[in-house]
Each structure stands twice: as structure tokens, then as C-alpha cells.
Length: 75
Image (tube, rainbow, N blue to C red; front, side, top):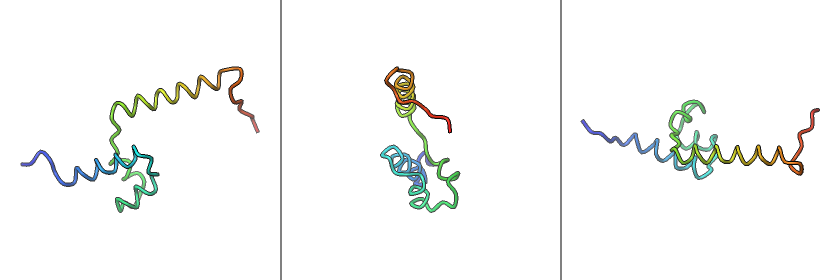
């Protein structure tokens, strides 16, 4: 039994493309999936990507709380 299969490369390739900023709808077409849900199952962010997302959210929220930061308008 092999520990590594060709199919694993699809997961890696799609994850790398997602990390590079390729939009989800484009990844779906590349993979030949019928739904975005299937494509999402192929993506496996690493711990650094998750930490980067957390830092980006923290920076965004810090700007919103600052007196000179952007203001939300209720419509």
C-alpha cells in the first residue's frame, strides 16, 4: 500500500493555487468540480496561513477602532 497517491497532488496543487490568490470559482473549474463545496474540501491551509488570517483580522479591527479609522454607515 502506498502512503502517497497521485490524487494527493490535486489537494496540494489546489491549496497552493488558493494560497497564491486564485479565486475559488476558478479553482472549481480547474479541478472540474460541480460545486464549490467539493473544491473547498480539497483545500488544506497550513498553520502559517491560519495565523496570517488571524493577524490580518486583528489589524483590520484595530484600524476600525482607531479614531481615524474607517466608519461603518448603517443604511
